[in-house]
Length: 262
Image (cartoon, rainbow, N blue to C red; front, side, top):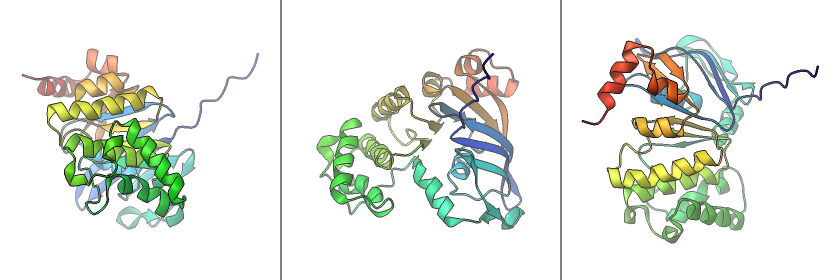
């Protein structure tokens, strides 16, 4: 009998992660895996630790305990507890460039055109030539449906268009995974659907994504796996049809009832 094929190394693996702000413990021992090509959604009430967990994945926040592995490579630390910080800045830069982040607020540079915003990081961080970066940037702007806005300034775009530009900027880094932190919560419903359409198209391409969202329909439609956080712990997790169809815990049942439209 042939030996079983080993499972592919996940893009992100987190074990026993703890994060505190002073006396406030925000993450209380999180274990989570984001396999290649999967969409993992993080849901939960405000203050449950969703965005903090995402920022710890991308090393924008230092955790006090636990392991973070990117494609099987463990983040190296020095110090312990509140004094713990990454030991290798080059490793941090390399991981961050491969884990592109899309924030709730679009964070576009107002003094640059949309095209310049999208191509800036590949040129300055990755050292790509400007002509190649521009061609890639125009391609990604077309992919998210705003090719005609390349020469516009951020202030001339709607919120939905600005968020799509932010997604194009993330894609232009050609990351191994994209981390979305409430990407539609700052938008009105009509503009929200523009962004949801783009995120769904990326999911259909098989891109690895971690998604913090308040939109339960989006999480149900997109996800391979859903994680429900409550007060810094994973209260329940599983495939979306199980989590949303047959929740096992009272806390998740109550959360889903509270998020249903009136």
